[in-house]
Image (cartoon, rainbow, N blue to C red):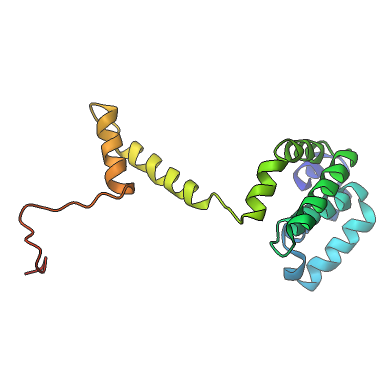
Length: 166
């Protein structure tokens, strides 16, 4: 928003949004007093920006992890309805996407699932593939991924089961 404001002829708009980015991105409990006053001024001056901030915070509350399964389902449905009525194109799109995948999202929230491990494993595999550039076959790259990521235990021929440092 601030980047767009700088391109406008009215420099007062750019001054209004200066410093607002961090206030809009931070969690409300972590705001400084200056950021709180900046946010309050933005709420008075720009209804669309204020609505976008409220939508962001409402969605954050849905995924905070302190709600029952029924509350999550109810709040997520309400949030999608609110987002699709708000006329901010980005939130309308997110609302439609969440509605489309609501079953999977609710399953992940209620079972407390996250994809962090999968993302980490994927990043590790991509790094290995990048290092394996020039291998003669894909099997060699897959073997290297299995060696680094899989449950492979190598026993070298000179290890006899005793202390490896002796």
